[in-house]
Image (spheres, rainbow, N blue to C red):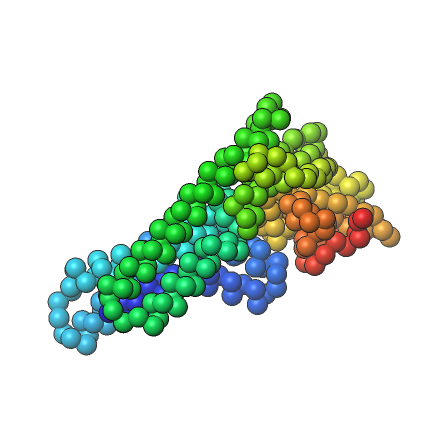
Length: 316
């Protein structure tokens, strides 16, 4: 692999995160667009073909040669390797990804590792550092293979411990079918979530599990009403159920709900305005809400949406 090919590989490894430019329009836009179409298999294939065609076209202009098919296929494979590796690693983390777009808008995650996996980050950092100071091609290959093996072992352990954590909770609550497990930075500690629907909302039970000793370290129970209210939501808005339903008309609110692992909502009423606070219940595992979306719904139907850093209701 020559210098140009390595540059192409590096660019394609980070290319899907170009959608983070949506942050210039605020955090609401970031929630709406990050890990969307640019994080799909469809985009990966399309971008690889486009980069391959552009690269080969430039080579042909410079060298005045016919279309080199083998070279084109090599560039496309390099692009696919960079893009698919990015998508795979994102899929392993708790934040959902729209990898099946445009065929499906389903948000998908494997929930295998946290964003800050010490072993994974150490393997990548050390391998990159050694490769940067190593010019011998064989040594570079050995370092890369060793790093990949270490990461594979890490992911294998996490996969096993994830199953053990789920079974620990299922063993106690055997009649529960809707179970979700979310990783922490430690492969032996997991959050296992039981979701029980009721009337118009959800009951969330979050269990912090020691997967090695198969014990529950601590737990948290939460309720979120009104989420699935499907009655009338037309002005005048005179109930919390209607306010919640009406707030979901906003695209930013809908995007936030889709991205949330455990969507939850709180509602207060003050001076003719319903304050609807959407947040991810999983963010309360440390006892506080980190951020969410506030939709202010007036009784006459006026809707204003903004990002909230922290809990606007100051719940204890």
